[in-house]
Amino acid sequence: MKQIKFKNTINLAETKFGSKIVYKTDQFFGAVNRILSSEKPIFKEGVYDNHGKWMDGWETRRKRKEGHDYLIIKLGRPGKIFDVDIDTSFFSGNQPSQASLQACFSKKNPTKKTVWKTILEKKRLGPDKNHNFRIKNHSTFNFIKLNIFPDGGIARLRLNGRVDLQKINLKGKNVNLSSILYGSTIIGCNNEHFGKAENVLSPGVGVNMGNGWETRRSRGKNFDWIIIKFGLPGIINKLEIDTHHFKGNYPDSFTIQSALISNKIKSKKIINNSKKWKLLLGKTKLKPHKKHSFKSKTFKKNKVNCLRINIFPDGGISRVRAFCKVVV
Image (cartoon, one colour):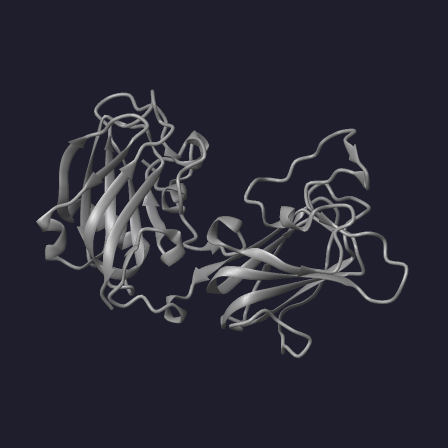
């Protein structure tokens, strides 16, 4: 079966990671928080509110004086940004002419004295489309400033990168290392027909079935799998397999394998060798709509940074949690 390719980056701007807007110049036509939504933008035909046409994004009023609009985002986790998507979906005739991005790292909210670094020079924006740009400055930032010229609307801003764990003191702490908040990524998966594999790394409890990983219905003696790579190695204290919202489509059973893999080894090689990894937890039955917790002395014998979860024969899982003592 053809393997699914993963970017190994996350959208650092998503609210589920704790990112939030801390300042905006205006939000007359469209609430600023919409720009951080993880959902795809939608269009509501003929829907108006007290300010005009309802739009799924951040939209400012028409400027009648000099200057431009901007907003400031505080990232939930400091990180390095590799590429961005400035999405003007459904904004046609009311999108900004241009946009730029600035960034900084600060322990406090930015002020007028803050020194910003430009990470994306002014770029032209077109109507109703995704604008993808590479970021060459890979410094660590926790505040992002989006400038739009002179005004208008943007549906979504996506900041694709990786959490910088060097800015977070985790040594010796017990945390869920399989969480995306601590730099975990999916590096391999054989199927995600109904739900993205990366959803199992999300913090909190899934809001519905669509917020988990779900495979197609298999026919024959098959099984499905995902591979999780931690941001840091650790010693596992407890594992959780959460099937919340999966009631008639949860897996019958599962196994977990583990390994400690060098960061220099490429994903393809890790995937190819993963079948040979040590069995951490043998075949275990699952139940619908339930959090399954597991503890074992076996978990504490080895330091790990990779997990392979095999589900039999198919189905859906909401979350995978690996509570570990961080060992750097």
